[in-house]
Image 1 (cartoon, rainbow, N blue to C red):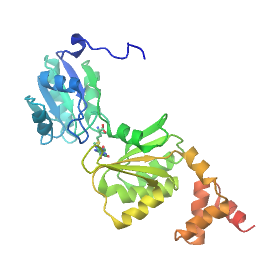
Image 2 (cartoon, protein in one colour):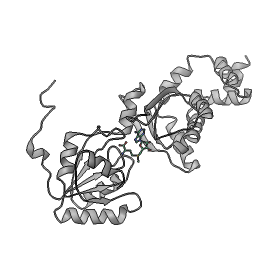
Image 3 (cartoon, helix red, strand yellow):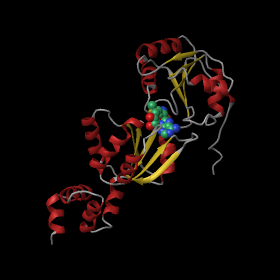
Image 4 (cartoon, rainbow, N blue to C red):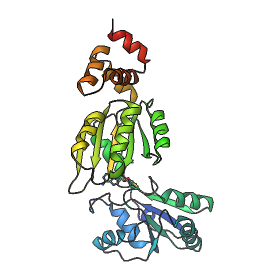
Length: 288
Ligand code: SAM
């Protein structure tokens, strides 16, 4: 391994004036924070926090006492300008979002854009990210993947997005809140067919749990239990799904759906969708 991988200089770690630091914080387990993150949080002039009730718990664990400014989705416009004006006047700021890496599916993204527009230096202090934690656990191909963040909340937009994703060959990562989980799983099934999926919930927390299952099995299991906690869904890409589907004959494929309780017509429709062929082709095949 090259000795160039690690380098630490006091100069590189010094907090500079007029700089925004994006500081990754734990996604659950309070110990998942880097030494550098603690150093930066301890040395900036102020901290912009997405959740000013949660962040003090983290700061008090590491004995950090700094003024907090709230910065979240519904005040990001005026607070963004306020933070930028302080940065331009020479102060340094650390941005911490609700959990994980700022700018990944949170309003940190907008503050970075604003800083870039105003010529303010931005430094990212890497650390936890729910998407990467889930991907590494999933056992699905991690060499190439596609991160979708949250699916659109509006049903028609969500369906449109999922139908685009149906063709995606890379592993797909989606963030999901518990109250949308079941309807999203149903929409995923309808648009993308039955696939392997890892449902990762409460990552790094006491009730951490990952279910390695299929979309149809996940739907059945949530008929008996309530989704709880925040989720990351890691979904098998399209090419792999087709290979799996083609392990079985067209007839076996349709029969599998009928055994699961579908009518013959629905089973034909589902098999045709999975295989990317017209219904008539499946119909003709099973009636040979
Ligand atoms: N910036 C964060 C990151 O780096 O992962 C993501 C912020 S986004 C607003 C919050 C979403 O991330 C949650 O709804 C959930 O889908 C996912 N998430 C965050 N923490 C999680 C955890 N401990 N377990 C599972 N999912 C988590």
